[in-house]
Length: 321
Ligand SMILES: Cc1cc2nc3c(=O)[nH]c(=O)nc-3n(C[C@H](O)[C@H](O)[C@H](O)COP(=O)(O)OP(=O)(O)OC[C@H]3O[C@@H](n4cnc5c(N)ncnc54)[C@H](O)[C@@H]3O)c2cc1C
Figure (spheres, rainbow, N blue to C red):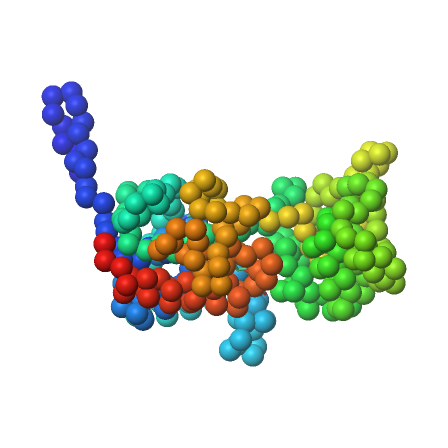
């Protein structure tokens, strides 16, 4: 509430809220951390960020998360995680953190709703696949456009798919897709691959894999399902329409960790953690894709979140603020 005094508008300074444990992120890592911390009676506060349920919520169906033999909707799984955490006392708030001060405890986090103090912090802000930012990409995500072959490859049995990229992940994921797809066509903007030699050899020799060089995608076409990609040859300028059932984009991932730059040790933008999810600052833990550039799965991220919460619980038992 604001108080008008002469010509000045004074906004009374509200005391920052102080919690034992703050979790940043509502993906599998953050929600699993909140569940474990809630069961340890830490009454954790979780800030969701703008993507409720995290990346998993972007996909129509998750078929490789244990316990769901028929698969589970990506968004449904996020809601189930949330309900389970809330049942034990986790507080989930639709709010985003935008700066942190980890130099003293309690840690200070500034979010849209104001300043928060926290005795321990779990960073589970995940990562975002780099997008092509072309027309149709957002609309077709989950309908044919994917950023995860392990997750979605199975849906493309005997179908034609396109892979975008020329690095290790593009070829690894492309080779993985040959298990299902009838053909995998790799579109690469250059005339040679960046991937390692062994991987290149395997991909180039694979009978199901084809390569289109010096070509970028300029659009993705489809309705309920993806139907084609628009292409442009960078050397000739020639435009084309290439029919496909799926488009797998592997041009890199960006961890959502910019706010921790210079505050926590990082490697290639990922927060460095040991095998107990400890970061370089005692009491600050990181879990899921904010700290993991390798596994990038719901189950592994949730596992890291649970581990971080267990460690945070032990830390808070040992330490008093
Ligand atoms: C299209 C797609 C399909 C997939 N399918 C599968 C699958 O079938 N099976 C599988 O195992 N994996 C799948 N994955 C991968 C899986 O979704 C991720 O590995 C997993 O979601 C990572 O979990 P996370 O909690 O680490 O991070 P994320 O899921 O990335 O969640 C990060 C969370 O942090 C929040 N956040 C970010 N910044 C802030 C901030 N400043 N303050 C507060 N909150 C913040 C975001 O809002 C979000 O809620 C898929 C990924 C994609 C993109």
